[in-house]
Image 1: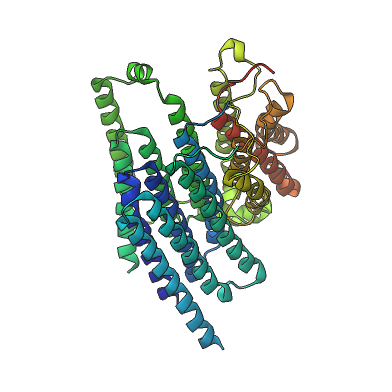
Image 2: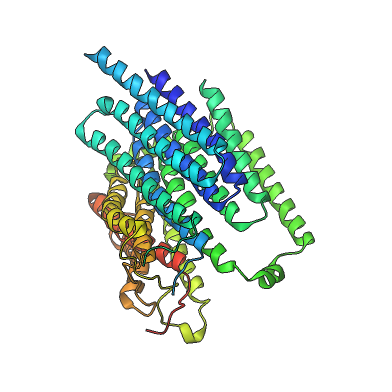
Length: 87
Length: 97
Length: 312
């Protein structure tokens, strides 16, 4: 069971890492943001699977923090791409 | 019962992994940013949802299960908002006043 | 299987780091930096250091990423000033060599450690129950390396002071950072209304659970700060002006509580920053609570930047 869960975590991580190509090469700023978002949700998925496989305490909390701050960071990125349309 | 649960979890998690892989393929292969956006959000929110669904029976307690569901709901909310904002930007629209 | 996974993860971290340094534009570099922080958090989980992973996810990827991002936005259009402040090739070469030497020295030091490495872990674990704190990381940070943690707390206050000191005289006392228009509908408004209530609960939970499980003041405070910034950029929360007493108290509350408890150690225990065993846990919780508030306030102010608006 644990082995299978780790395998699933590895596959998701690999997928998210492959998606990093878009984060690095773009072309649009939106593509980079999407890839970062995919890495974030992929990381969360992998963490949840690792938490279930190993039973390590607190790993789900790392996923929780990533989920909250991921939302916050995506908003900040879009605002920044738009040029902080304040004032 | 337990074998049935294991089977259920296995199928849900495997399906979740497939959605993640599909999302990556879409992100890499689709021709323009808007279609990439469209494919990606479905992939990662549904993929994560299926993984959470598969892990729920093994969460070990209602608090841990609730936390898993909360993580998924947060990712859904984040994904929905971020993609709306990105799409607004891609279409060159100003945000509604 | 796990070895292959670790290898891929390690290569990805190094690859993203190199790419982030090499890329010429600022915006992609910040994306690379955030991705690097995220991957590093996964590496820390793989190494079994969940506390460090939490800190990296919250502070390394989240908070630092957004601070860098806002800095990038402020740097737009300042090409001439940036070029003037960019060090020349000789300086950069010297900095590179210095970094290389330090990195090499660290690598040599780590590789030449005796096996098993010298460790105080057993002694610490023996005395941990006296503190009443079940998370060994928190115990070490608050009791055995209390001075380090105190200095980290004070650094945040100085960082805020440094940022405020960039304000021109005529702006002093005003509201920090740009003022965002109120979002009455649309996705940003929805997120900024839905997320903060959840985030505040999670932030306090992460800070509170730090005594017994991975978590603590820096991680929890970062989440609180992120929620505040979210409400701020959606125009739902107005930052108090830098002249506000309450704001200044929020920034210094943590370090003051820390120093106060530390000084009381002279009277009631063995010296600076030593806690009387009977009330060690309440004291640690008091410091952690005050520090959570101060970390959150300091991070919001660091993202907001120096006062920009009209004088209040």
